[in-house]
Image (cartoon, rainbow, N blue to C red; front, side, top):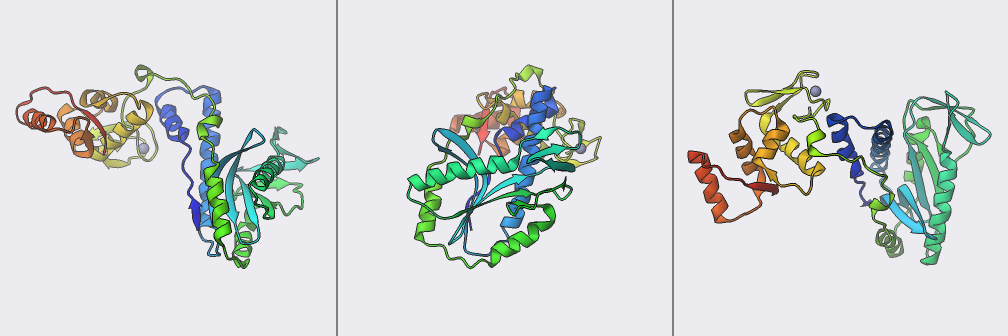
Length: 320
Ligand SMILES: [Zn+2]
């Protein structure tokens, strides 16, 4: 049973949108790609975990603190006898292992996930022991990407390689397990001790409205090469088609994500989308799909007036 669902890191859609609309620094780009890759890997892990039918509690993306040190757990599974903690790595391609270190094929050392996991386990152990929970713990590094190869790989049952994943979950499923009130108390405690995730967020790039490229990004390939054709928006790169209404709603939500404190008015969304010629159409879509900030009779009246005789009014919208 999933006790804590996984949520997309909040900075990922922001960075994705900025990546489309401005030139990110190489550092920000690197961070965006690694975040995206990590997120995909975690989703892949979830696709295996959700098949588990044994009586267990699954908690995803935990951010905790022990001895004044923050630590993150990709996934934690509580079974009757054991707490399993997982570090999910979405490395793709070839790597090698030498003298307890991981290297890519260019000879660049990468952070040893086993060390990372040992540190996490010891912090968690200490934290749980203070709370009176002393279940045995098992740690696993899961290399989730099927294109991952590790030369000179250590024979270590803490590491699950791509070809072993199915078998591993199959074995986990076969462990007799019956969760009790005590296990649920443990899960509740872990949720209660969650830290706010802004604590670990690196500096996000700064941006202003004027510096961002306007337009509607393609829902499929994310390029801004989208043009309006009748009631549809069509991407010139991948030929993906989307109804203008849904494309404008997406773009408006993207605007709100990047500028949460700005008022979402017809004018600004019209400028932001840039490819939709009719301002009236934008107004109609916003009115239909969002909620007027001033949800009063006057606003409705003004809207009717606007639609009938083009009396200019400025309405701001929020998500329904
Ligand atoms: Zn496209």
